[in-house]
View 1 (cartoon, helix red, strand yellow):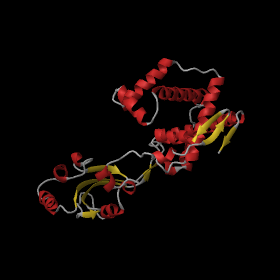
View 2: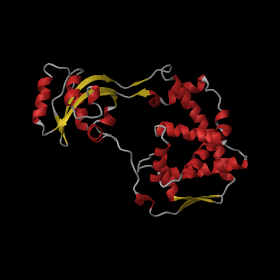
View 3: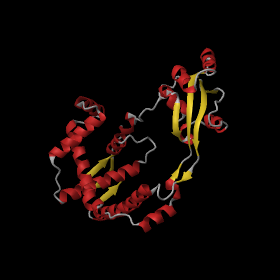
View 4: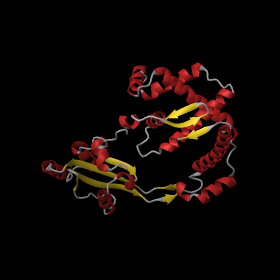
Length: 299
C-alpha cells in the first residue's frame, strides 16, 4: 500500500525479484514432452512486474495454459507472419523505449535474454492471442438487456464510485523550523498552491500546487493524514503534522462520498463484465478440452 510519505519522498520504484529467487531451479510442471522450470515462472512474474506476493502456482498454471495453446496452434498449423512480429516489436520499442532499439537490447541484457529469445516470446504472444480470438472471442455475442440487469443487481459493489478526496500538501523537513515559519507567513497573503510551488519538497506534486486530486484516502494516505483530513472542512488548512522526519501541511480542496453509479452511468462497464464472464466460460471449456488431450503433471 502506498503512503503519502513513501510516494512524496521516495517516489515509486518497480519491484524487483532478487537474484536469489532463481538460484535453485527445477521442474515445476510437465506439459506433454515439455517442461516448465521454476526460473521460467519467476521470469514471467518479472516480465509483468508482479510483486513478491504474487501467487507462484497461479503464474505456473498460466504458463501451462500457454503451452497448451501453442501446442494447439501448431496442430492447427497456425502461422504468424514475420512482418506482424516485426510491427509488434516496433510498437514495443516506440512505446516503452522512446523508439531506441539499443535501449531494448540493454534491457534484455539485464534480464539475460537474447533478442532472438525475446522475438520468439513476442511471436508466441501473438499466436496465443490469435488462437484465443479464433476459439473464444469471435463467438461472443452482444450482452442482452436481461443479462446486464442481472449483473447490475447481483454486483452493485462493482459499480460503486469510491469516496475520493482532493487535497493540497506542503511537505517540509520536520527540523526546518525556519522553512515552516516562512510557509506560515506566506500563507497570510498568498494562496496555498503558489506557496506549495515555492516551498514544498514534494517533487511529484509541488509543480501542481501540491495537489493530490481525487485520491482514495484509504489507499494513499497514512492513518495520521486521514484523521487530520477527516476533521477539515472544504477549504480549511490543517496544522503541521510530523511523521518520520517530515512535516505535512494539508488543505482539503474537495471531497466526494462513495455512491453506486446508475445503470445508465455504468452501462459500458456492465456490458464489459457480462462479456468477460461469458469469455471466461468459453475459455475454461476450451482449456479443459486441451488439458484432456495432453499429459500434464505439476511438482
